[in-house]
Image (cartoon, rainbow, N blue to C red; front, side, top):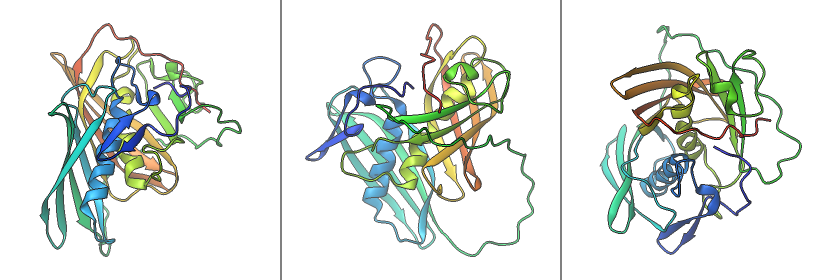
Length: 276
């Protein structure tokens, strides 16, 4: 989750029908692509290949992180499973050396008039959105990490999450996911969903879980480049954990991100992500 890696044009560079990960796509788990950008690439493939009606918007993306995605060329493929009047379903896969390393399923729904709605929802504590830093430097992403003794003030690193209390984050992706391709609202949400894993699984001892999947459910697409997440739940038993975070933008909550994770003791993530 470092945000001060060497500069590159994007996290992936297209080359024919493949995508080449650049050095900044490397995640904290070794010589592999971060799940954050794996999910983002799958979201891009879904959006690229569905050719959706403007009134049909992505409402759910589930990413399965089947295997580590090597820092090597990635092939993509997709299928539109159903294209109905109100509901579309699509699948996407990332393939390396003939093996599917990650996959996603997406649900797209037709928008329409909003019915009267007074269903109950739990309140969400959205931290204020700080101003963007005046100097971006070589940062690929800007994070404002909230938690710890003063939950209203962002920390300068991920130490704010290494505690047993509430946690939240604002994130703004600066670097394009794919060289030459503008980040869309849906791809921003697909990238942000993976943050729910660290956000909901971090505790006072560090980050003892690694996620096997994540799902982003959206009532609407995000407005603007800033996305926030607030941890809602964390439950664990026998080495398996689940977590739920609320997603929001500057206008308010837009949906949820959920994760399922496996125990992975002994991993100590870097706490050097710049926040602000």
